[in-house]
Image 1 (tube, rainbow, N blue to C red):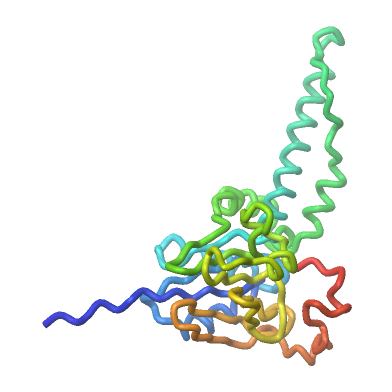
Image 2: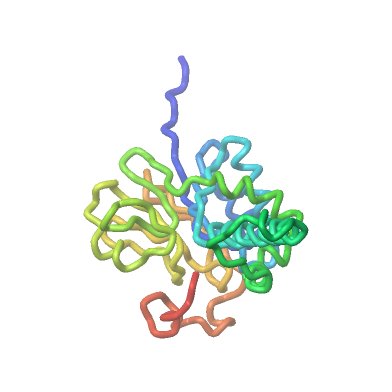
Length: 255
């Protein structure tokens, strides 16, 4: 007599942010037959970004995981795109300078600033750790990341949905929390770190600040089970005990 087929369970994993050791420890707690959904912001912040990206991508290519796009992946892509436009603009300018004035095409677009593009990338942790060549290699991969994973009666996305259009938004917080009408069932998101996983109506927020000294969390939407491992340091060691979203300490932060 054959064994009954076990239902497929999913684990939605909060913002990893380059915490490779925490991710490896968390994976040891999750059944190998279950599906993993990384809710974005795998990159930036932490000390081992390249290793984290490679590990998650291996899980994606093996079919075990889905990596959703977060605002940090989107920001890196935008900065790389801007740099590419700078290079193209400079090439066009050099070509135009070698042509007679009458043959030079008119342009209505201002030249993109090379220093501005470089500043964007210089301030990006992933770019600093991986370097220009590796970031270009990753660009195509990051560009194809989906923004939503649809489960049976639930969904996962990085930050939430715009309550005016109900399209996914990579930066939204309060408007989604306040106006979500349950149309997609339970929605599991990351993006906004706090010391514990929070439930806001039918929204589950699983970013527990691994890179800020909290925990790395995985939540199973089918069962409500939660599994966690320590992040980089304790919250108290970083002086972040009171820095939970909604408080004044985080008012101007971009996560």
